[in-house]
Image 1 (spheres, rainbow, N blue to C red):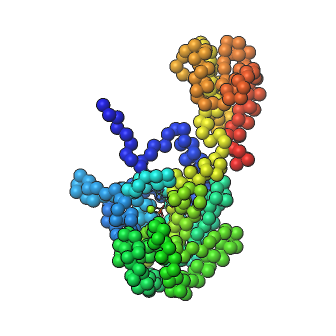
Image 2 (image 1 turned 60 degrees about the horizontal axis):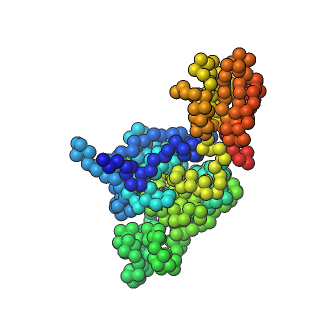
Image 3 (image 1 turned 60 degrees about the vertical axis):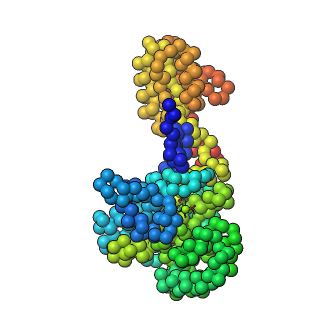
Length: 434
Ligand code: ATP
Ligand code: MG
């Protein structure tokens, strides 16, 4: 019988690499908590209309990437392709935006029917952040400075660039849109098919095209900066000033328009040249119109989402992952004979209690001493702790180095505790004291 395999583009994260995810998540969550952001947990399934109304009918996401199906009661539902729409929906539904500000984050899988390749999957994970009720550029700056802090903590800061742009007010955008369509229409035949379609539905998105010829054409298009409204210009200057003061470097890139329809004013992307075509690791911006568009009171809002897989690929690429990140077990504890099983079990429990963070796996399944030692080796542990009759009698422990040379020593309990603490420190602090 043919075995069933995973759905294309929906990769498994196996035990050998889940530690990398935990490494990133732990650091990201610590930063978010440290900046006063609170977690919101949202369903992965929403009514299809939510995305059509928020992300926008003419976007790639809604037009061709959504996993949409009819459930058993005949309702059209969609696996969330992004988190902002659901977050706004939940905030409105529970009155979280009424007379108050919010700083929120969420993490979890998103679903888009795309062509799978390195850094691009059909199920992928995002950490997303959304802030509501703040009008000024201070919160835009806070979000960006917080992401910069995360890159520093992860050790990838030197490999990413902040690209910044403003999309202005809806009115300024409308005026620009008109000018752009007027300029592009005579050049319509030279554009790729997707861009020709966008010319009618969503012309600004043509800047987002990945087709070289199209990029060449739009390079000479009218500049949005000539249409920018005074309020948005002041907002943008305020943001740049705060980033300058904080020492966060950026490049203003007028071609950053983002793939989603709901953005206004600030938009930004953190990009890298180390991951080929999938170079955007984090993207976001301001969406002051979205809450009202979904039926709420007009509420200023700004947020971003980062793609975890891409950040992990980047961390691996630049050697930022700690040396021992994939070591899941520090120590393997075995008795040579089942007669000493109770003593081994008791020792394992007291070692875990006395050495915080210690990962100790206890031998189970019996077998000859040689079999037990083989299992110790296969566990990936750095050292095996061996209890034989003589050790139990003397209150000592035999320690065998499994990776470095295989030498064996007999230690007192105190000496053992000290070595185990050092072992844990090396793993958790990693290379270069990271
Ligand atoms: P791209 O231009 O790469 O398709 P996007 O503009 O569609 O990205 P957003 O909707 O802004 O992406 O999502 C935010 C982040 O989520 C992206 O910057 C990226 O890191 C990640 N991301 C988006 N789509 C995927 C995917 N299919 N697989 C893995 N990560 C993704
Ligand atoms: Mg995309």
